[in-house]
Image 1: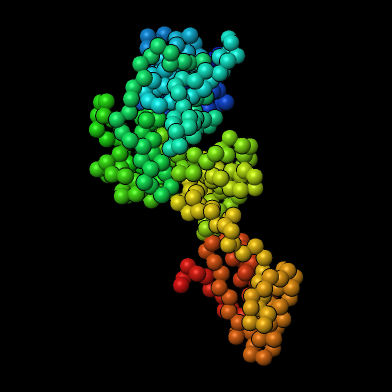
Image 2: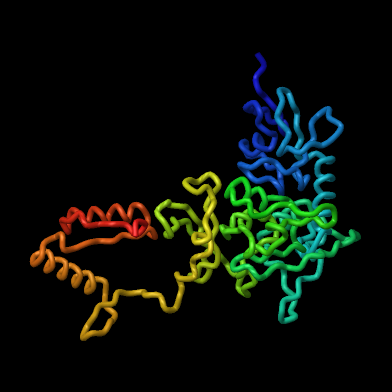
Length: 377
């Protein structure tokens, strides 16, 4: 009986029936670039970047949707494949306002495909996705330039009226990732492809703005967009090119335990993304609160130290002083009225572990079962 063996770039690899060339390559750390592919969703076959060559076949095939077959020999970086990718990247760069900048390997100069976007104050500005754009990375990788290609204007104005997300249709490459994320991962069904031909665009409802549609602003589309078509409304901050580091943490808005990456700059959170597509329980997905609800962290009116009441006024105190006062009052109440005179409310905005510790403290230290959770209020 023949084994399920496929050869990719002279590497003999096993595969499961029904597995695609792309998934086999990714599992074996073989890089096949793609712009429209989104893990755990059905293929869209729109970007034509993941094209590969199969020995003996006249046409290149899309690795994201082509199933592996026994004895198949695949080349992911053959001259035919590279030329096809260059053409498709050029087509995308010319399709809209992609003012990417790349370094020319021959001259070591940086070349801009187009002039920068004009900000409201009239100053030239780079795309807010500059440096974090998959199309730009591919243009750099394959040294693709738009010189000599006609640049197509965009008939749709940028949508800025939404509370969290700016939609810049001039940068949309119609890869369909946002649609897949919305419909197949979050299952919100808020957006889809609309119109046809040169009028093709991603629409919400009957081409409504997001805030007037079924969108819940989970930001899943924002996270998967490979270019600058979907950006957070704070993306145009002047300090976006400063050094930023990621901090892995657990979302505090409920007890599910969603894993997230905080992008921190000068000790300030500037962006939040879901952590990793393979990391449970959320597998990189977040809700609107988890993704966008972080301004309170650095709010000027946020309490940063305990307050205790003295002479009828709240005054700042140390943690030791505040905890000692609470302990004294708990003890006095228990001695005078009994343990059941005390009750504890926990919060859905802390982790399950914190809630567990709270109930252990209530029962073991305060000696009462009077503990409840705000989700029941």
